[in-house]
Image (cartoon, rainbow, N blue to C red; front, side, top):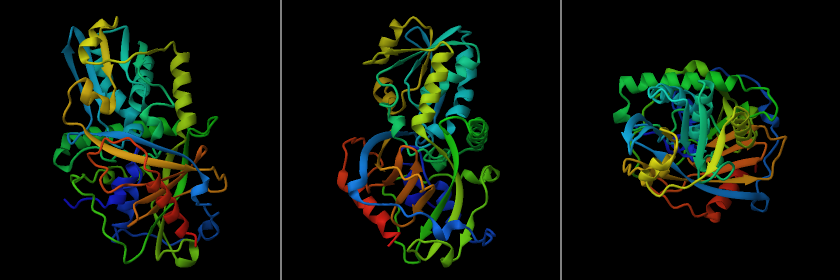
Length: 384
């Protein structure tokens, strides 16, 4: 199978970003209508390094086999593993938690422990509460310190979710169910206070002479999004006079976006309102779980499961994002192919990211400011 272009994987740097964008530009046989729009008068991004207000790095947990959702008896506990979602943690969290729920209920618990307070941990806790369980979260960090807080915030359920060789028919069926289940939940959050979920227009940009950018050392990824084409509007090709960008080609897409600060706050408030508890606790090894009073434990530790449970199948994928001062008038996304660059408008700032050449398999969480400055400078080139 042909490997995805880097942009298809790169904006997945923390939550996934433009698998959709790549698919849109690589389907010339797909009939795409031309339509006038407001695109030519888009507010320009004030892209300059002196407007950078934050740079963050995190490690995404990629498993070639896909997410681990299975149960085992360990140290006298019923442990349900729920981690390894690559760049699709936020996107698949609700559907994935619902897949894990029968494994949790199999032990007939009244009270459970969830290890981890990130995207998967929080959502799993809420799904368990909705099923009538009492839930206590044990965690080293809580939002906004957790790695999930540094995600891009795009709904990209197929972002580094597995290697193509593991995308069996059974996996594809389960993935589609998780994607559709989560999608329905997110639509129920539209329009509420804080706008935790929104739909945004975005622009996929490219030139005829764009450089190739195959990610070194990465596996082939399966084409899964073709299973759910009904979950987003069709893309629209734009004529040169219909967009302001300094490129030869532009295509408008529409995609769901999470405002992570307000969304995490909503999850936390709902969890606590439903009787949830959060305990600050670190675990040096899995044997320490035996000390917990709960018999049923859900492991939602993400990349941390590599050290805690010895899961050597987990591959770290380094992701760095930067935020520019918010511009409320900028309400559109940008994905620039050949430059591995994306920009996503959020209430907490304009999120800018580009993938480094050696991010796959890289657990280094140190900040490279020069990388983000270069991304902002490239973004400025789009507006002349």
